Length: 243
Image 1 (cartoon, rainbow, N blue to C red):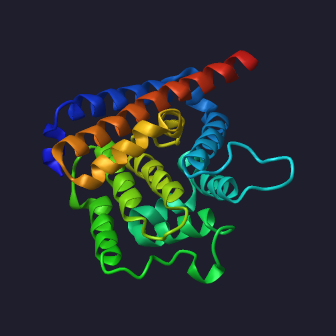
Image 2 (tube, rainbow, N blue to C red):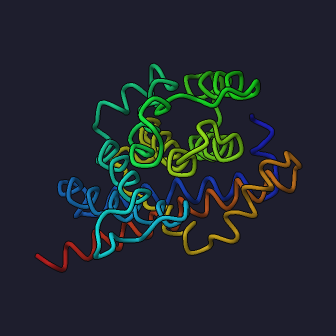
């Protein structure tokens, strides 16, 4: 995937995202108080991811909403970057994917299909290829790997339900497991939600495989990480002010 870094603007966007996330982690509130800021980041990420999949931003007065409920379960499994799921991702990403889908889609589909990829000839091989990439088959920066994994899962829709929530969770997993955002403080999902039309268009561009489409997706993904780092700083500052 190294040629992706030569696409116009990609390397710069990736570098800026990494620098922004580094600043967020160095904020004085996050040096020791990161569990609290990570919890807030996780909640905001879940809500935004739910909206991007057609779910609610918050539970309605008349009871739970299944997409948001699933996104919150996924967020809880990833919160703080210390959960067992991160370790599973590092050694057995397909197992982690199955777990993510079971959490995200528990209220959307029958139990016997939770965690089971669709029976389509393209799904299995492409998931195996993705698993190879995230376990060391490439040395591209984590921001690029997160974008590719995210875009591939959106495009492939391997489960046929909750695929967007799963794809965005995998993007978080990559940034956490790689050390780019080890505590999961960033909230790129909010940026993508606010630019949902651009997000959907860029995802289609990724699916096209054209240089222009890949560039648009990689840059938008990195911009999300950058904006998510600003959101992380905002959370830290809010908590510092509240003391």
